[in-house]
Length: 406
Ligand code: C5P
Image (cartoon, rainbow, N blue to C red):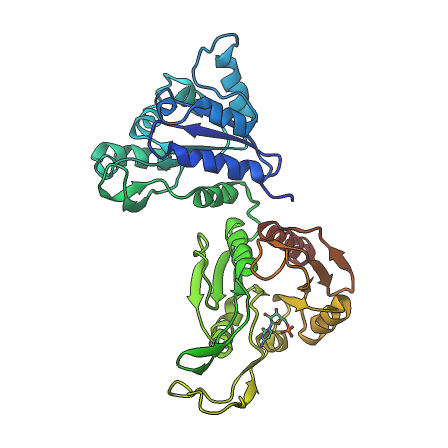
């Protein structure tokens, strides 16, 4: 799986805070995405997590001091600083924030940061009163003005027993910010609409028709498009997923609600990607009370829902880029090709939903892109996040860049 993290040199700075245990998980996520990670720990961080843990997980020596035995460590810092594609300090304590704001370089981490020219993400994490203190807030303002990327702490119960802002965001959230720093910004100025998840078509107040779509593919696309600078709206049916960072959310339930939300925004949008598994039919009438099980059999009369994508395809203007998804149980090429033409799409992403490891509910997908010009591109099985970025790569290469050069 190739992502914007693959083969990137990331330096993870760990300071002495209780949240240091979360940096272990962050390191694992980074390695999973193919990054090469080097860890620099402050002296105090060693009181919370041992360097050996980071060394084993990163596969590289951990730097804990300016003058480590047997090596010219001060030079090594400069090498690391030159080679890094991004740096993340998590958790960042009041101490390192203060030192960086003042330009002080008195240990390995602060010395290293002064020599870095790549993006630096600082993730403050500390007691609420420390975080809200005038000194820390003033220093954070200085760091923002100096071009550091500050990931605000989350609110919640803190290790010291207080409740409020100060908690280190989950590793996945820190990952999102890193990916944002590393992804190409090729969707700046583009309005992107993504639909995701299933729809629910009510039968009565407690029952509905739906399908097992988890929404993961659409959420991955929305997240990836936001990382690349797009202005993204995610119109989603009911899911259990957290909101992707930097995306405007619109929650809907039925196909008709989804249709209205999409149609309301077509004119302002440039790219519409419909991953939602929209219910093709809805009950003819929704019963106002719970239906009783009096009969042995019952007939449910269904009515066709609007085909949202087809209607968008009908209304589309020249510069609209439309992408559909086709989940098929057989004859993928033929069915996907037919939908591409019928719905007037630029790309249709086809996947056979006959494999338990991929598709509905899974983090992985095995898809083939079918293009308007009749060509196709099968992808190896990979994580939905990676599929999302490759799809956006193709949209940019084939349609955005092509229209810019006309
Ligand atoms: O025709 P089919 O439902 O298989 O086409 C799949 C594509 O069409 C998906 O992109 C899906 O989001 C979209 N679709 C839609 N409205 C429907 C049914 C499907 O937009 N009522």
